[in-house]
Structures are given as C-alpha cells and as structure tokens.
Image (cartoon, rainbow, N blue to C red):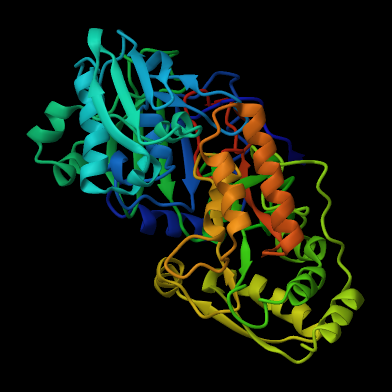
Length: 515
C-alpha cells in the first residue's frame, strides 16, 4: 500500500556500521539474500535498540556549517529554531523565545538546559561564533544569511541578529544554521579537525562517519528534549537505488530512503514493505529565455506552455508520484501557493496555432538541463517538436550545468530547478526568474512584484504578494509547468515514527522498530 505522510515530526534510530568494507559486505550479502529474513525470527513485540537506514543521499562532509539540509545536521546538531514542511511558524530549539525589536533587529533567548555532546553548555558565544564562521568562510549555509549584517551577544546571554532590511524569511533561514562549540572547533583546528571529531547538541551524537559508508548515531543522554525512542541508528550510504531496494527486501536495512520512482511498483506490498511517496522539495522549474528570439515573443512562450502534457509526464516518468505544477511554480504545501490559480490547459492544437500566428513554426530552440534529467528533457523536447518547434537537447554533466546556472547560457529553455532546502516558500524559485549574470527576464513590473514580497513582514499581505507574482508569471508565460519531483522511500514491517515528507532529511529521534 502507498502510505500517506505520518503526522508531524517523527524520527528514527541506528545500528553499527561495519567500517571495514561495508559496501563490499553489503554487495556480497545481496548476492545470497534473495528473499525476506528467516521466518523463524518472530517479532517479540519489543522495541529494537538499533535501526538501520539505507539512503541514496551521501554526505561528503560532516561539517554542519557547510552543508544544506542534511540528515546528520538535524539529528546530531541543533539550530536556534526549526521550521519543517507543514510548520506555519518556527518551533523553539536552542532558542526558547524571540522578539522582533525593530524591523531589522531580532533578539533570541537561549534555553539554559542545552549542552553539547561533550557536556559543555551551549552559550551565546557559541551561537555568535557559528554564525560568524559561516559568513566569514562563506560556507554553503551563508546563502541563507544574505541580509544579516551582524550577529552579536546581547544582554543576559541573549543573541541579537541585525539585518540590512526587513526579512520575513529570517526565522526560516536561521533554522538552517547549526551551532557548534567554539572552544572545540578551535581546539581541533577548524573544519578539517571538526569533521574527524564532530560535537553537536542534537538528540543523537555521531559515533563514526565515513563518506563512503555512512554515519553511526547514538542517543545523547544529556539532550535537553525528549529522549530518542531508539538508542542506536545506523545510516548507510547506498547510492545505487537498485541495491538500496534489494537491501530492504533482503532485510539488511529497515528503511530505504530516496529510491527511484520505479519502487512504487516493484516494492509496494512486497514482504510487508510499505512505500511512501512525498514531495521532495525539489521542482523541475524550466525557464524560457525572454531576452532573445524566439521567446521574446509572448505567443511563442504561450505555445511552449500549451504544448506540454505535464500529467502525462508524471504518469510516464514518476509512476504517478510527481506533484503537478498547476499554473504556478509553487505546489501545495509551499507558502504562496494558491488553489485559485488554474493551470494553462494542455492544448497542442492551440500551441501550433500560436506558433503560426507568430510565424515561428520550425523555429530551432535549445533545451539545456542536467544529464540526470535526460528522460524529462527528451519528453519535453518531443512535445515541443510535435507542435512545430525543432528542439536540440543538451543534457549536461553537473559541473557544466552549475556553470550555466551561475554565469548564464544562450539556451532558449533552461532547467533552472528549485530546491526549497527546508524553506518551503515561493520566494525561492521566484528569486531565480530575473537573477544571475545573464537573467532570462528583464521586466521592471516583475521586479516590482518580486520586491513587494521580499520585505513584507505581514504574513497575510506577503502571501497575497506572492500570489500576485504567481499570476503574473503565468500571464507572461515565463516558465514551463511540469511537476515537483517525488521523494520515494520504503520501510519494513514494524517500523514506525518516521516521516518522509521533509525531502532530503530524515528526523530520527522518534523512529522505532518492533524487534
């Protein structure tokens, strides 16, 4: 059965990583284990003290300041606040409360019972150090702090954050800034030493880490909140999704995280396995280059939009699990989504007619994206060609695509992509529309609409501004509407308390398995 999302905020637990050649051992095990675990091992009804998770998402660093939206960050480290998908407001974490002193000044009061895994208290000095290190080193998470001018210690052990302008997303953004102990970071010589001896303040402490194998977690007895439900959690990196599925079927792991969409058909109901399909937080945002022919012509843009059968692509490419972009970039669950905006209908005859009106039948266009999305690129290209375009596909390796994303491209249609990275807000994909060295859109009216929501602190007014931006993007046909990518995972019988609707992240501390 396809299992609906488990209700708010669950978690999970570990086992022991076989450090010496885990990948080899796992592969050999899969050759001999072709069925479910031995039926003689009946459930005792007790909760196991170890949970094993396989995931196709690996972590090439254990530095929480230089990684975005990773499982190890949310379980072994902590931030001032946390706002996951479905949370209308940020939840207290290391900060027990906060106040907006002015349009640009926020003050956070820290909890007094939070300690790092070495027993040392979490202080304002540690918070300030962590923020400043992210910004000074320009680590990956610095992208969340573009409006932050200063982070400082306030009176009474508080932390003050000053921004350059009103920032309605500040609380969501600082939920991605994880706190490290200043003294330990400096003692081990910075990021490299910290990666070998990581210390956080989350519900789990990291026992071992190997970028080729995975992460071992153990419950931290001194955690300020509710104790983890499972003592040990092992997260194995199994990047081959076929091997990941096989490991679950063979009983070698309890959870398979981020599978290929085909698992919806191949795994569901197999040996008591439940398949979970959620929105991954990643969208296929394709942008039309309106600064050059042919897409400087609105009719040609409208033709491209009408040419695409997104529901058909969802069925063909994601086994029905993709989330339809119905006339706007945001999907349900993203702030700024409006149920009242209707998707432009799939109408190849209208698309052809629009091309004829624009005298653009036979126009050659280039569709550029990532090699891993080649099937989607080809599907879009075939549909565009069917109405009168002549499409050349460029399926680039990731390095080439990143260069194009940052520095611009002459492509007529570009796979922009949009990852909400823990901030489920329509502003993120909208920020791409006219950004970069060579923006695809140069439109003062659009710039005004985007700016209107950027600094609006009233939630209702900001939501309306985002909806108005969505309506304008639809009217101007600036993007091709396809689908939000699904996150497909699966769990063995007896596994409870884990949810999969936060995309790349698994929260582990409430997850259990019946022994």
